[in-house]
Length: 260
Image (cartoon, rainbow, N blue to C red; front, side, top):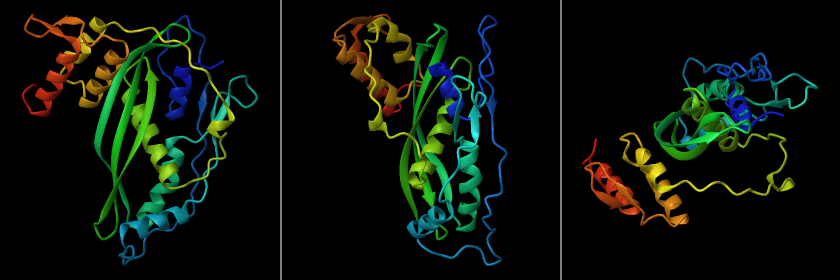
């Protein structure tokens, strides 16, 4: 059986490269050869100058379906499956966007990280991103949309994988590309009880200068859910401060530019 970590690596379109020496090697990731989607290049006069929503609808008209060509594992191997990687999405949407003069640019990224373990007990890092994309049309007008992505990684590629899945989701969902995947309502998974993280285990993350505002809000919510907002923690100057108050204070300081 593949682990969550392995499936996240495959979903981002990359095989896991770093594994402990005593672990069984992961199934190989086999990308499908990229085929020419048959979308022409813009003519000498460039794309037609139309509003962005018209240009994007024309992009959608060019990309009507993307086959599952990438394999995680080998066909017939237990735990193997086919999927559409981010490269397959870009291979189709890239030429379509160029033809109709459309740009898709990330303009804001919010990240959240937490330490987790794989089903085999291996330490890993979970990354969740919320990305705001600006879709710009040939006349310069634009629309903004958001897409989320997540990944697990034991090395330093978690953020890149999460960003890849976010972009892939944007293109497939925003482009209304049929995936022929199992409907979410067709399965039901009962969530098990997760161990409660103590307030002191959040301290390094709360005070770390790179912790995003989105993650601070999430930490405040988690502390509230576990009834730990009033737990006393030692803050940056050595004083005791309630965990919930510390999260709120640091979030306000960073929003105001008062903390580095």
